[in-house]
Length: 120
Image (cartoon, rainbow, N blue to C red):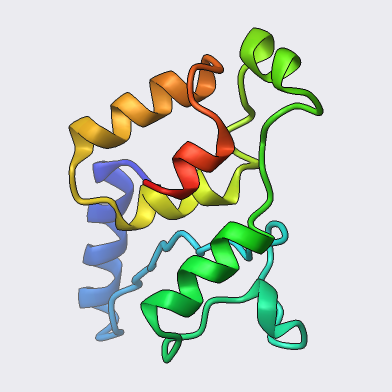
């Protein structure tokens, strides 16, 4: 919404003694096997009480790769970062933006493999 729209909403809420409209936007963490997490398949979901070792094992075994079928294709064509769950998790949890950008650049170009990203 534009600032003008927000101002109009705020004035309308005050004049009618209503509560202000609010919106919360959030990005959902993808499941390891694709876009949605499902607790019915415990190996493809990261639980809050999983140990770091359990999280690592789940990512290494079950995270969907955005890479290609062969290493040659991967090196030539790069990766679909939107489909790659290991990279999506790095976007959420890696604190070093410069390192994340380096991984993004090298992985999308095919220089890094899925294993290198999962180990980051």
